[in-house]
Image (cartoon, rainbow, N blue to C red; front, side, top):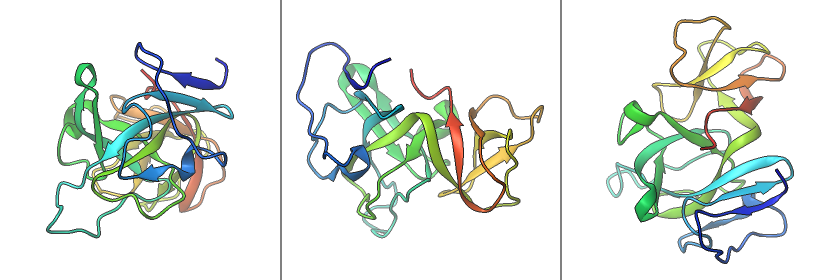
Length: 181
């Protein structure tokens, strides 16, 4: 697949900073929501971030490497909303939407941005143990983190990638899979 934009039908205009999709964060939709974009071997989906606790908790935001989950998904109507909390919205049904890849800390409720759905993403691990290369990745029940299972582990329903790099807590490279439909 060549680099470029892949829409759901009509050719539409997209604004992407020359530095890459990781820098596109705005309250306005600068691309068709739900569109896929391939850039330097990775695939991104344009989404709207929703904070289910907003406005009661306006400080909830999406961090680099954070798994995001479907909050509301209705592709025929152009609705692709994600959140950081796996216990709300459609997370229990549809699981992972992708990995937050914004290099800005401004991804809060109502922000449009790109999430990574294919290629290698830096994924944040906070425990209970550091992942090993080859571990399969699943969504975590704790917001703002990922969890992992060893090859052949019990939970094979929500696998979204395979750890590629060294074992340590924090950001680890993960080859994403099953997120680019």
